[in-house]
Length: 227
Length: 66
Image 1 (cartoon, chains in turn cyan, green):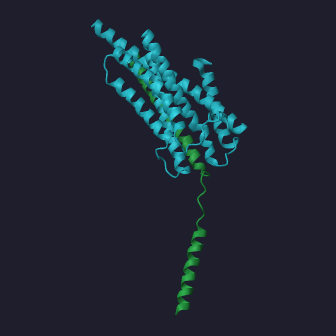
Image 2 (cartoon, rainbow over the protein chains, first blue to last red; image 1 turned 180 degrees about the vertical axis):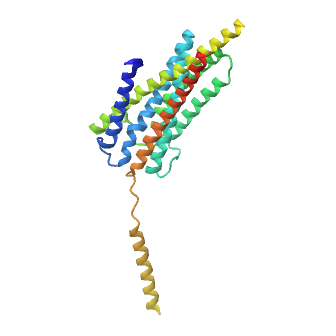
Image 3 (cartoon, chains in turn yellow, brown; image 1 turned 90 degrees about the horizontal axis):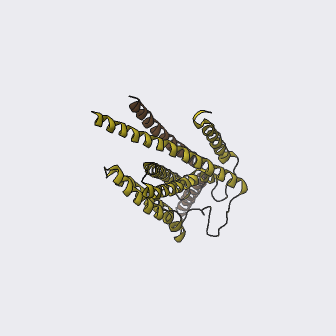
């Protein structure tokens, strides 16, 4: 099939099956009732956000070593997606919290840490937009993305485990065991896989856009020099 | 007179008890619309982003083709 259509079709079918399975195949957890199903969409969003920030940090390290614009595009695009998925995880978490805790936002350690993470990555874009010289912008943004990437596990994994939280046990909990029904685990891992593939597709699209913008800029400069 | 007051009091208590029984207790976690809202928010968020990127790509291709 042309232009990688086969894996896009595969992804569409895969995610459709995951959505069906989340509602009809996976059982409910006793304490959470129907809202157990939120797990199959909310947690993959948080996972993709984490993955995005890791990819952004790695691409930034590579940029500082080689100064190739491609690495800067990957870092920028991945941070963009990371912020999108962080917002999605926070909003969907708030919808769930409103039902279970009776309040959408109560500064639970997990909510507080994700809020700080959002601020950190929002500042990344503010930093980028504040510098005009593309090389300087990419270099400073790379340094910032590495620092943010180092801080990210602290906010995502450590803070919520230090303080008492109302948030249900994360998959990798304190006891180090996966406490999940077999069917639920199947749907959960399938959803994680689907969201990961979706992330790489979205990343590819965003990089294509950045490459196009770069080509256009180059073309305009060449035309200006010719005149 | 005292008996009438007692009867009225008993009727009022019975009324409030019936009113309390008539209101079913809220069952936490059984609202499937919460799950639906979460699913739709995520898909609309992703779709919106993809449409935004697609629109910008199309505009860019048009400009590059000019």
